[in-house]
Structure formats: structure tokens, C-alpha cells
Image (cartoon, rainbow, N blue to C red; front, side, top):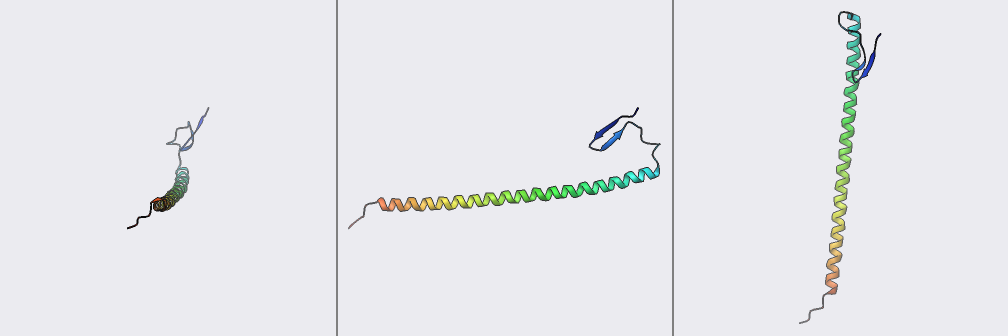
Length: 93
């Protein structure tokens, strides 16, 4: 009886690998591993690019929020100053 286990490394059987492997079989596995490694490296690069885009978007959003907050604060300060000037009695000499 043979059992198979699915893992991150792929489908693994209980058969002992070693002397039973042929040069052709090992070459095929090597080619498959090289292709899989290339595929995984490309995927990692795509994910890194997405991560950088999200970080950039987050920074832009944060900066825009700060600018809006500063503009709102400046407008409020201006209105407060104007209200203060209007409520002061006129000084005559």
C-alpha cells in the first residue's frame, strides 16, 4: 500500500527515493524544479511590486490628508482671527 501526502513541497509518496531514481527521472525533476523556482520568483517580484504600490498609495493618501488638515486649520485660524478683530471695540485717541 502506498500513501500520498500533499505538502508545500508537492505531492509526496511513501516510496523510498534514491537508488530507484534514474538519470532521466532526476533530470526531469530538475527541469521541473527550475521552472517552478522561476515561476515562484516572478510571483514574489509581482507581490513586492504590489506591496510597494500600496505603500506609495498609503503615503500619498496620508500626505493629502495632512494638506487638507493644514488647510482646514489655516482657514479656521483665519476665521477666528477675523472674528476676534470684529469683536474688539474701536480705539480712538
